[in-house]
Amino acid sequence: MSMREFVDHWAASSSNGDSDGSLLYLKDWHFVKEYPGYVAYTTPTFFADDWLNMYLDSHPIHRDSDIANHTNEINCADYRFVYMGPKGTWTPLHADVFRSYSWSANVCGRKLWLFLPPSQSHFVFDRNLRSSVYNINDDVSEKQFPEFNNTKWLECTQEQNEIIFVPSGWYHQVHNLEDTISINHNWFNGYNLHWVWNLLHEDYKVAKDYIEDIRDICDDFEGLCQRNLAANTGMNFYDFFVFITRFALANIVELYHIQNPKDTDFISAETANHFVYNLMSIRDVASKMVSTEAFNTENICNISEQNRSAFSDIIKILEEESFRRLLVALSKAYNYIDRGQKDCLKMKDSSQKGCLSVTCLKPDCNVVGDIISFMREIHGPMDLANSPADIHFYSVEI
Image 1: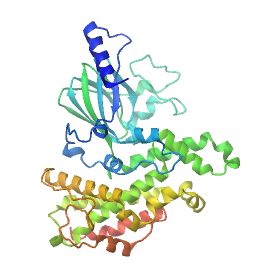
Image 2: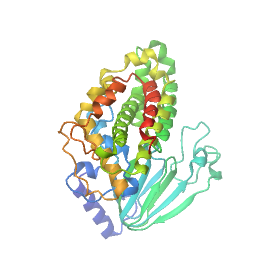
Image 3: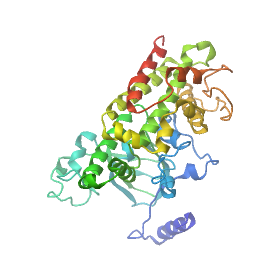
Image 4: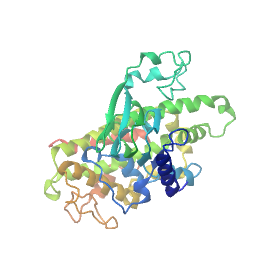
């Protein structure tokens, strides 16, 4: 239905006092993506280190033509949402997409949150760890979910103008205690990147097990596993590898400038350490990817050209408009976090030549030339597992 029809339905239900069977909850409205010129709010500084939405503002989540269809691109436009619903609407028990962080700000209304720590998450699953409890307020079957009664829930009431932060892996169920409008973001960065990889790896094993019996008659078994993973989880190994490759390069560009303080606008030691930590986080995740079947010699050779070109040619990546936009976004985000002032930074024109780091003061910066003298091509996770940590030397003086 249209937005007008939803609002009319909501108003009619409220005026009639009808709360049985006709409650509708508007969820996952990509408000920022649909109305980019209407800046209704600014992301709080605490949550600005948002790799997921930075990336999706300039890159598609999928590269393969048989995955990147029109429907998927709408669903993956971004992970910044508006939720609107009357009293009595609710969200079933779940852990957030990609095991990301999330934050939720109440514009108006009140919500009741019920949280379960990750250490207890297995209690809400059945014996096979495939099906989870939908509504914790139901009469949950002890036969189907034998450990559910061992759960210990944390409860919180969120008031108007308050923000809830949900860490990675925390299952939660949410109820609107009043008519409510909220802003909700999912995001991840170097600090919870391992959560994303762990989820992808676990979901991959499930997707692979389901079709293991057709391996011998399948021309591209690994490709089929990856397509199923993308359909089920929203991202596959190759999507994720393109993602971390580009963030490795973007963090290297930012860290590069610390070598020459006179050519760089002031940047704190804390921010420099963020870049180092990000690269080491990427290295650690990449090292876990090395041994997977998806990146063995045979399957690397079968990767689609769309995916291969998106991570292999460093010169091409550094010159892409999409990467330049990502670099600007990352650079501005860390300056915003460092200084706490977003408006003081003048955004550089993404069509200009040379370096686009907002901290760089040098008109003839040779960051691209210096990076490609170090490495010109990335062949797979092993290159990220070995290389980004070597950039660590940039921060020795810091």
